[in-house]
Length: 226
Image 1 (tube, rainbow, N blue to C red):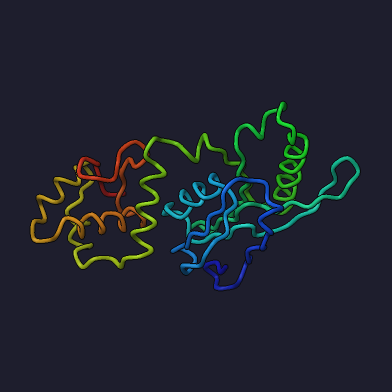
Image 2 (cartoon, helix red, strand yellow):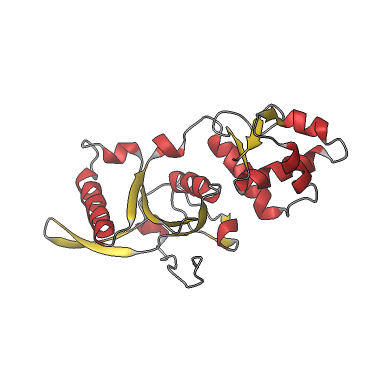
């Protein structure tokens, strides 16, 4: 993993699948990290990755980037952060992804989870790096967020920017208009190419849209990012 300075900051730590607490296993490729294949160990980790990969403010990231040690009931334990994220402003954040139920005191593994989070937060405090625990409440925000983000990541991973991208950008203004309106303004281009251009422009942060609550289709309103 390279940051903007060009040096390798973190490499993903390989974790045997049987030792990772979670359900389901995902191996997507990340466009922001040179189309490298990631190892993600739960549906929630995959969905969190989608929010990171489609965030225009993010320029790099690494899953399972760093292992730290901590004490629990007198025993030395180890913990690996779920993700490290690098932003355009060069700020960094370590992230732990948890289901809300794991953070409730009635959960059997609660004490271990609580201590793990405390240890990670303290390590980040000492190293002056931001730390966040992210759950499905924020990751799954909006009924169409995940579906749309899958469509966007798939589009930019597998397709180059179409030749009409600049003209599509010029068609989008600071005032909201539907994708259908954009199609009408650019009849010389196939709708699928205009739609692909809009996905690229959203991915790059040049165009905004409410992809949490609306399907990325003709009725979606788009507008320029000021």
